[in-house]
Image 1 (cartoon, rainbow, N blue to C red):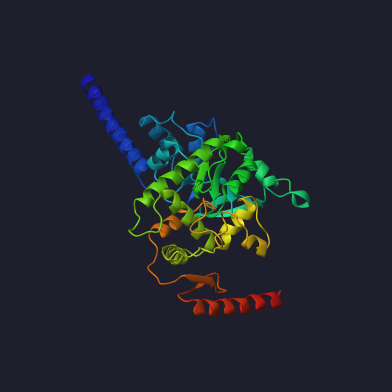
Image 2: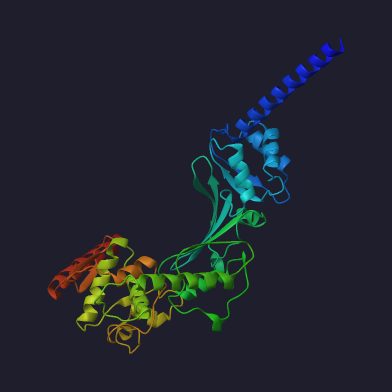
Length: 392
């Protein structure tokens, strides 16, 4: 009898072990298998969250088949205590293992709310936008001008005030090509998510702030951001200078930066940069003056603000070191912060016979080899200007 009982108990124990092994194997498959999520979602993990709360949120969102298996998997892989705060884009079909790795790895948030601070040539703009997980595109929820003054000055919209109070809001500073150092610095002074200040005697050299996108955290020091921009620009200068072709009409990286800044201000079309570079470099090689308005404008404004009017004859005839209608060669320094493609155009221009160009009414330019051709192009442009004024 006792043997029978022992035999039955052993049988039951074996069956239980087999069943347990089956459950474990099933759990492992569930943990690593493709998840049930049919459309990407944004998972927000507030500071102080627990794995239990996150697992239940994921189950409620339909991102995991079992909150319990999710937690067991986190415990088994020793990641339960490594949960990071942030907003995470959980892709369609993501497995529990992939989600665990994502929310414990840390780093920048991959979805949620983003504040984009755009610094353009003439103005700055703050955008609040939210990532739509389903489409992967951002939806703008608010926009305002942080530098507006007088009657145009606005209290930041409620949407901005709200996201500023959220710890997982991401911040990005975008600096456009062709900005001046003054424009960048003045714009950053108005960025209330940055700390610190920039003194007048600490202003970076013109041309030395790399146009780019910079991710920052709320409370980041503005001096640290400026240092990142300067370091990035210096690295670009060194890299591009090493790529230069033979026969350029300048000898130093500093002169290359000056030429790149002129190219940047003269055309907004990427496909024209090397043609514009060829015109200015052909002129230098022939001993001709550059005769470019943007350098004269910089001499008038010193890179501060926008001229807002046409150049006067007195300014075109002035003895300013930036008046390339009067001086020989290049001005003494850059007139803006050029992007890397303008630098590349400066060190590798197209091979053309052109020494003239003028706007053609399409946003681009008409190039010419002779003064006769150029005068004809200028006449066409004057006609276009007259027609535009008549239609205003």
